[in-house]
Length: 234
Image (tube, helix red, strand yellow):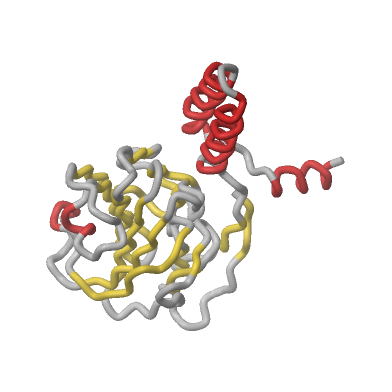
């Protein structure tokens, strides 16, 4: 019975709590408006299924090892560049490695902690809604930055709204201690996540590579000979 349930939940991941109001609205519109014209019912039913799929929140198996940095989002690696971090984060005005993950409207949009650590600072910055794939989106778009203090120092991850996204959701607070792979927020309907690492860090991903939040390893900050990771589901 347990294996059957695991198979079902893998094929049909649960919907995150943020999505239930949107799914409920879509269901009501489908039933009410679809009752007037059958073709419209099927169109709206398809839209309802897409809304439920957008807010899906599948279980992920996360590697646990001090210093491993995992992807905070599903998507595609769109940038690997050395640049200055956003000034509002209060980090030193020195170049850092920025790994950008672009999420389209079909990706899972629940964001996960890239590393175990304490949320040292959360900074929301209003802005524009440019295409999140553009490099300048890091500077001009609406965003929410988290500075994370971890065992090897400090890194930052920034949620960036895109063309369609109009709401960045954060479920954590300053001072919280979260484990790698745990959920900390989401962005609705297409967006991007940036991760800022110390300059000189060797990325373990390549441009165009697909990532899974909480699973794909972006970088390893461990010294040589560090213990192997232990994996856990979250």
